[in-house]
Every structure is written in structure tokens, then in C-alpha cells.
Length: 572
Image (cartoon, helix red, strand yellow):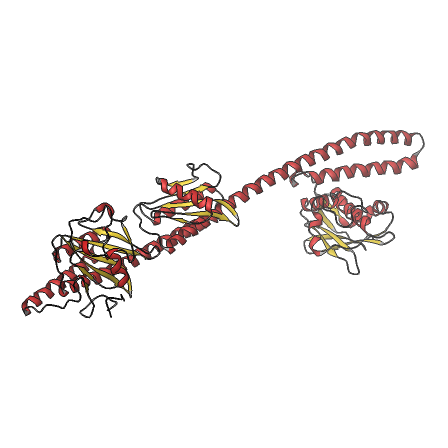
């Protein structure tokens, strides 16, 4: 409602609408009945033509041009123009005209309330002006309006109690628009408002369908590849597909301004400027034809995604949100690729360190063999000179050192196939019993208890490697169990494998560490009080697994731990 117009029909149509003119209120002139009927027929025919045009014409600009041309003719005017509201900016933008400067289409704007057109949009009522040059509400739009036009009739386009535009007609000669003409133009505006609203809904539905399809494709690629360039190219391609005729790009932070990572179409200078602002200010930048959003992964700035749509008058909130969603997808891809690259670099560094460590230990253990060979030679000489008892035990210890060197080498080799396995059938019970003496020496501060000879438990594996696994478990138990406590060795046969268990009364191992303890260089407890390098259990695991078995740790009832390993039973 305007202060000087009184009560109005907010719909802006019909006889009840209040008409604002420079001469005050006007009433419909009474004419001949036949003239009135002819007028109504002419109006109805024109309205029907507009409806048919809307149903048959798919080109939005062409439809508006035809409607404007025909409105000019049917109203007996020299020019007609249509302004549409951009609610977010509070502007009216010229959408179509047939007599004003066509270069102003999509560019010329008025604020709501500004000029006669803006006054009508704000007041929601028609306005007829005999001479615009003498009306204080008149405002000339530079490079659009023409001085020779004198009279003007403006009516609002109203949809659901909201003004969505203003339709104007202008004449060169001064003219009084009567109530009949005003009502007729308002009828045209109402029809045009419905067509525009329907077209907008249709375009929005099509755009939303393209947006959903684009997001679906990008999401699928994100989960199927780590190729950053492939993902970014797809993001930009799907972005511009939603807006035909547009161009887009993704610029990564830190790269040159004109060196974008992914691009589709030729970018305007304004688009590159918008992308730079989005990066510098860390916020969305929305212009008339450009929208740019920063790519953020948490607090890290990665770059910007930018879209340029030539001739675009306004980006809606939903459209900005869609570009933002694709920008988030691009940021996710960049962050994912960056993490993957760092992970690969870290993994490669660890592999290099592991190779260097393995090479060092291999060299050291290889060099140990030379003095061991010399010591064995001297012991053999002593044995030949009558020191048989002493040298026999010394030679046995040299043999044990040789086995220790073998175990160290087995633990540092990178691949299980490098472990030489001499698989054969053997009696696991016999092996354990025969090793008890050596194991008692290895754990001489403890009491080693083992099985007695009995029914054979026939397995298929490497007898010497199996003995190494058993020795590693007993040696590990001897380091952690209190002195003078029992270390018990037992054997059991399951459906397809035999299990050897070594139980101790040590401090035990927490559940979360029972798998980790078999990894290389893992040592638990106070390392300063317990000797070792963290290689023994790792080597035991690899030897057990290389034979097709497994190794694990469990809690010992009453305190301590039970280390077990399995060996496949031999097939009969």
C-alpha cells in the first residue's frame, strides 16, 4: 500500500484494482456494448495467444521478445519493456524490450522504489503517467531510456502476493491511458507472471536434475580413483554442464594466477579475479556473471572453484550452494590425493630404512660367521689334544650361535619366499622331547617342563625351523618369567594341525599388545631391565607362517602368558 493510493488490490488485476495516474483515479468509460464485446474478444484472443506461445516456445528469450512485440502492438504503444525482480539484491533488471537500447538487456538495473518502474514494484499497483519528464518519480536509465518517449503505463507482475517484475509501455505522443487499457495491460502482466513462474520452476527442476547427476558422478569417481587430475577435470566438466555456455576452473592455492589445475571453456578476466578474491578472502564471491568459492579442508586453504556464466543476471542461493558442494568435493579430492602422496612418501622412506637396517644386520651377522668358524677350528684342535669334555660343550655353544645368526637373518629378510623351507614329515613330539636338554640350558635359571615320549604327532614342515620357533618362545619366556619358576611346554593335536604351547609365570601381556608383540622391534615392559632387540618373536612368527602355521599369545590362568604356534598335520 502506498500512502497516496489508499486501499489496493494486491493482485494488481481486475476492476477492483486502484489505478494511480497523474490525474488521480480514473473510471472505466462507458462505451457501446458492441465495442465493449469487441474489446473483450480482442483481449481474450491476445491472452490465449500468449498461453499458446508459452506452450510452444522453448526458447526463453524468444518468448519474451514475441510477448513484448505483441504487447506493444495491442496497446497501441511505440515501446514495451519488462523488468524482473532480483530479490536477493533488491534490484529490477531489464529482461526484454523492443524500443529501448537492446544492449541494456541483462545489464540495466533499477533499485526497487527507484524511478517509475521501481515505484510500481514497491507499491504493488499500476501507475499511468501522462508526461514522465514532469513526474518526480521518473528516473532515466543511462544508455537505455530514450528522451522522445513521453507517456508511460507500468503494471506489476504479481505471483503469490509477491511482485516478480514490472511491465511497461511507452508512447511518443502524450496519452491518457484509461481504465480499460490499464486493466488489459494488467491482465497481460498477470498472464506473463504465471508463464515466467512456470518457466522458472521448469528451469529450476531441470537444473536440479543436472546438479544431482553431476554430484552422483563426482561422488562415484571420488571413491574409485586417486588420480587428482581426473577428479578435478570431472568436477569442472560437470559444473559447466549444468549451465550451458558457461566456463569454469579450479585454481590451486600457491600456483600462478593464470595456471589453473583444471579448466573447461575460456575463462573471463572477471572469473579469474573472482577466484583470486575467494582465495584471498576465504569466502564466496558472487558477481553478475561469476561465482567463486574457496576450497577448504578444515582450516587449510587449497584453492578455489570458479564458474562464469555469460549474460547471467543473478545466482540463486541454491545455485551457489550447488557450486559450493562441488567445491567441497574438489577439496576432498585434493586433500585425499595430498594425504595419499604423503603416505606413499612415508611408506617409501620406511621401506628404505627397513632395507638399510636389513642390509646392516645381514652384513654384521655375516661377519659373525668368520670368527665363529675360527673358534670352531681351534675347538676341534683342542678336542683332538685330549680336552674332549670341555670342547664338546663349547662346540655345542658355537652351534647355538650359528643358529642364532640364522634366526636373525630370517627375521630381517623382507619376503617369506626367501625363507628356505625343507618340508618333510617328522614327529613333533620327538622333536620337542629331544630339545628339552638344550632348552634347559637356554633357560638355566628356570625349570623347563616338557612332554614325555609317547604317541607320535606327525606333522609336515621344516624340523630345524620348528626347533628354532620353540627355542625363541622358551628364550622369550626366560627373559620375563621370575627365576626358579616353571616354563611348561605342551603339545596338542587338533583336526588339521598340531599346536605347541609354552606357558610361563611372567607379568603377562595386555590384550591390546598380544598381536603387536610379534611385530619387529616391539618390546614391552621396562627395556632397561630386560635384554633383547625385539627380533626374536618376529622371526618366530615368520618361521611359523612360512610353514603354513600360525602363532599367537594368550593369558595364562593364574598369571603369566601362553605363547603357541601351530604346524599342519601330515596327511596320511
